[in-house]
Image (cartoon, rainbow, N blue to C red):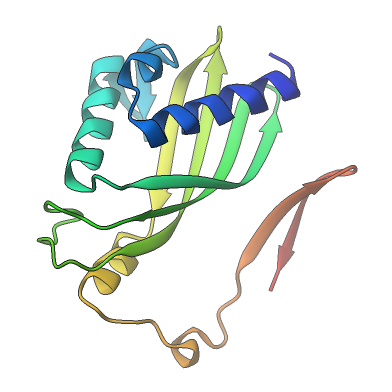
Length: 158
C-alpha cells in the first residue's frame, strides 16, 4: 500500500473503532497476528477491543500523529472515556480519563499482521482515583515529540 493508502486505511480503522463496527474491524486484522509480541488470532484482538469498549462504553480514540515507513505504522493517539465497568483494575468511580497511547503496526496484504500498543495505565488509575499529576512533579522530565513534515519524520524533545 502507498503512504496515502495506509493513512486512509488507518483512518478507517480508527473510525470503525469509534463507532464500534466490529464487522468492519474484522476486515482489518489477519487471521493470525501478534499482539504486543505474543501470537494471537483475529478473534483474540476483537475480544480485547470488545472488552475495552464494554468497560468504557464511551471510549474514544483520536489520532494525533501517524508515521508511515513502508508497511509499518507508528501512531500516537489520545484515548478518552468514562469507565462503566472495571478498567485497568479500577472499579468505576464516575471519573473520566485522558491518556496518550502509542501503537505500532505492520500491514501485510492489506491487514494488520503485527500490532503493539502501550499507554500509561498508572496515569489512568490516578485520574480515575481523582488524583492529578502536578506540573511540579513533572519538572525536569523531557518529552519526545514526533512530527512529520515535507522532509519526513522528526523527533524533538521538550
